[in-house]
Length: 340
Ligand code: NAD
Image (cartoon, rainbow, N blue to C red; front, side, top):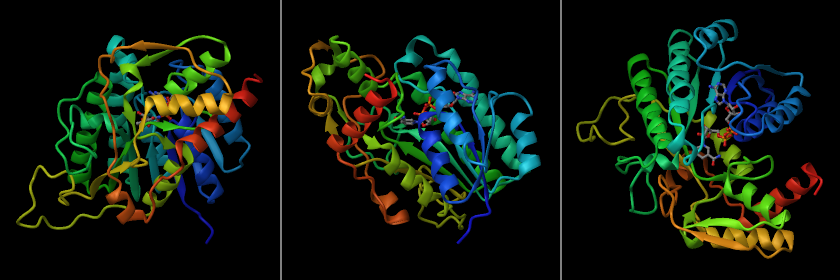
């Protein structure tokens, strides 16, 4: 079937945005990207991703901040996107400890501008990125979407949790079909320089020691980027629908179908110790890492683990790339990109 739908993707030049746009273009969508090319990390990496996307005739991009008043409203009015994938955000748990203000504009005001634009020109389905950090101080594993997700541990997580509530209210009030993704530590080629895999690979190649928090005992449900995009792609065509509230539904249940809205974990469902991830880098590089063992950092949680049952039931798919395979693909990309 040939696609004729238009997708609007915010954060298109970002790590996940780049792979999402590539996939939508491959599937025949017309894609309108938005990205401010913020300097949170090397804007050159973002420009290079964007250049790759601009090779495709069906891709166009606006390099402005999403919170610019009227920008998204105007784009929605002119292009009437069928699908919206909202990935633009100020990301990063640790950065939010020292720079909380920078999260307000992108994450809260930006998401508000998007929801307002959608209210007047509603797409068929809006899909917004939230995070496993939204589960807060939860120690019960694996994380299930129906769990209480309170007590966020960082300001980044707090703003993401707030966007979930904001999106829910718009879904409820204006009948907008909304899916919130809770992504679990995404990695792969073109990955983010502020994340552990990138930092460790770079340091090891430079003969420098790596800072390993919580003695390497932290567990993360590392999710390979193309697996994640496969799940995103399938969820695009599985919008939530509003049904009447059954008598026995708990109003606090995050899956309560009073609005065409749902939260879906996207994760491997196979948590890996940080130490094992470092072992995979050592194997891929053929270099032994010198480790500085450090305590756990403020804002961090000891473990994340996605329950992928809902994703499986909605899409018939669960990410599954093994950490060794995924790390090896990242290292190959890194050495090629930086010629090292
Ligand atoms: P990224 O930083 O690579 O991508 C975000 C992109 O958004 C960047 O290119 C940035 O320039 C752009 N951007 C930031 N603020 C903007 C603004 N105000 N206006 C327009 N563009 C703006 O991050 P990513 O890893 O690709 O993350 C994408 C989404 O997924 C984010 O919402 C992030 O919070 C979420 N997420 C990511 C992970 C992960 O492990 N990578 C995990 C959980 C959730």
